[in-house]
Image 1 (spheres, rainbow, N blue to C red):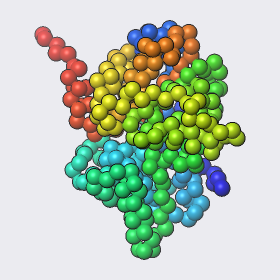
Image 2 (image 1 turned 180 degrees about the vertical axis):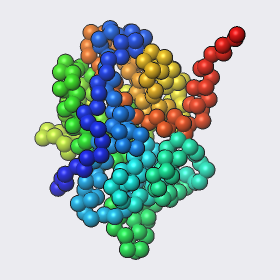
Image 3 (image 1 turned 90 degrees about the horizontal axis):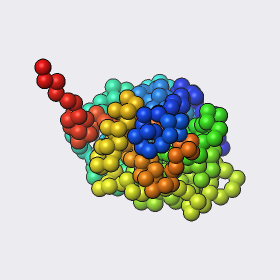
Image 4 (image 1 turned 90 degrees about the vertical axis):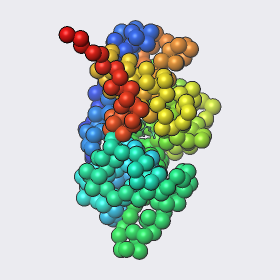
Length: 324
Ligand SMILES: *Cc1c(COP(=O)(O)O)cnc(C)c1O
């Protein structure tokens, strides 16, 4: 059953050329385009808005008065769920990994501004986070509320539908698109693009949020298409995970600096920094070639930069000293 999506964002998002970044990566000046899904509007923007349009539509249709979702302390998805709840007049409870003080500023500051309530789950794994969220929903129900649970990262079959539309926008904006490069977190974004554009046209750069990202993407994409999307056909790089999900890797650091200094484009340390590093690695090993049209999907995440102390220290280090 598919309820209608509720409009939350500003679409279609722009597709912009990035000739100086292209040259720095070894591509031709017309080869590289940036799909600005960081400019989706609501709540600071980002890819989760397209998914939330579907999932909030379903929550409203079910008569929910509260939405509950899960994430890391600096979850962009949690922040945008809080913003969408505010926009729609729904209460929001965010079930976050860790304890108060685990992380500060960034997305957490915005969660507070949007009026979300936080439930800290402790140092738990994905299953532990899901259990904590189920307990929060049970408590809300016993208090007389009507909660709707939105899954981790918004990556249900319903949420992933939002990225079908992004794929359709891309086909119109750049008909000879060869590869769209996207960060792969919980998998819904890549899955929707694969369903719209085909497995061969999407390169996912895994950030290390899932143990089996190929299974997640093939399962979600299969729900959106008539034919089975096999895991073997997917293009996924796992060389940018580094020491784990929340770490700032050396290639991501360089990618942040490169995008900022060639195009004035700000990436985040966890997702888009790794995705651009993966794009660069794909050019180096010939998976992406000059003369082909490549799209870098900017999925947002800017608040996360300000919630990541290592990224802030690195960014501040970059300023030169003007010696008068
Ligand atoms: C969540 C997120 C992603 C990954 O999207 P998934 O659908 O979870 O794979 C990429 N970039 C940013 C900024 C995100 O917040």
